[in-house]
Amino acid sequence: MKAKLLSSHIISLTFQSKSSKSAANTIQYVLHTSLLTLKMKFINAPLLLFAIILKPNNYGGVVVNAQKMIREKISNHNQNDNRRTTTTTNHDNRFFVKFKKPDESNNSTSTGYRLQKDDPRLIMELPDDDIEVMTIETEDELRFWENLDNVEYVEADSKIYLQQGGESTPWGINKVKALGVSDANVYNQKVCIIDTGYDVNHPDLPSSVTGTSQISGESWKEDGYGHGTHVAGTIAAIGGNNKGVVGVNRNGQLKLHIVKVFNNNGDWTYTSDLIKAVESCVTAGSTVVNMSLGGGGFVRAEKEAYDRVYNQKGVLLVASSGNNGSSARSFPASYPAVISVGAVGSTNRRASFSQYNDQVDICAPGVAVRSTIPGGRYRKLDGTSMSSPHVAGVAALVWSHFPNKNAAEIRQALESSARDLGTVGRDNEYGHGLVQADLAYNYLLSGGGGGGGGGPNPAPVPAPTPKCIDSPLGWHD
Image (cartoon, rainbow, N blue to C red; front, side, top):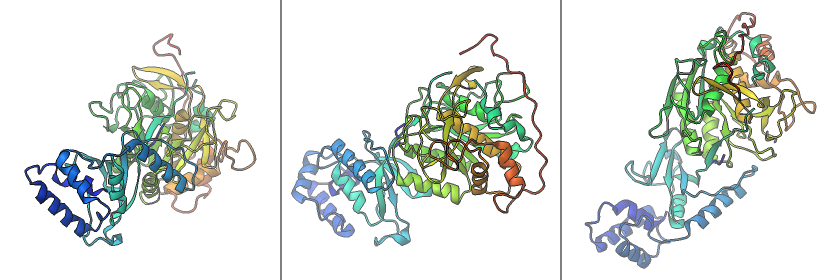
């Protein structure tokens, strides 16, 4: 998965719809604007005049090699960051522009310069983070935005991909001891699944679900690719109905919120779209967010958004560690505010594809995981995309018994009670170890994680294990 100024440019911004103005008046107004902003001293006025007269409808006055500039820009951002990142190219010229708060700006105005809502360069706004996502096509434009007094930073918007491996059965629910904890209280939790959509008509999945789609022309209730429906089954497939599989939360009462960010082909999405999706999860009242996706490099805007969501909004963020089998960091999993989940097989050994690094927090089943797919069917899949929902599901299950605990306390319980694998203590391959629902529950029941408990809790009651059958009869991978 691949995550993701100019005085001449601002003139096209200001005067694209004002072609009736004379060139002389345009230049006079532009020069006046430059004096007001004190940000256009580097512009060559004759060249600017040439650009306006010869290319009155061109967005960028001075043509440069935009792709080369963007590659260099992203490389510089990565080199300046002290994290290990994956350098990417931004072929669509999308950038985050992060604005300072008004009291932090030295601008004479309260807000400074921003794009108008009807400007074709404005892709989206992320108001909670004071960010505009926009198209920047020239080096001069990039410099313009970077030099504005009310702008904190500018960085590339990268692409994000699904973290899915090959095909291959559901043993993971028992492995994480989910059936050792009652799911009678899961109605007080809501898990948000950011993915390819959800088959709302699948007979083995809850039907009382909310959602939204960020893909034009495609409903969140459809999942042409199947990845999101598979993830949902691990979290919440219904038990005791003699159909297919059982999820971590199996009584059908766990609330789900779906945000579709990948189209029906499972193509990539942008980091900005992912931030928007997470904020949609928060608005919907989600307590846990699952992101079976990743890639790209460190993005400051994304890190700050997730820090806020986790630390201030109290939402637990869970993501897959990545599938390239290396020690490279994958994002969003490698941000401190996100639980990075690696994958293990049935013998508790790290899956060969599972990324390992100092940001891996915990591990869960991710090999031959059988779960729901669209059309009332089931399939076995490999990937850290499959391990992440085990942890998200366990987090909601355990949290349901201690609703007054906060996100940090639930995270501490999961990590402190994990079954140690690999070298003694936390290590880069398994993090703190294999997530264990029953041990996390007991950890909190015995007072672990500090105050804020949910009061008296019933003892864990194992749920009945449903008969697992093929549906339709005779179906197999």
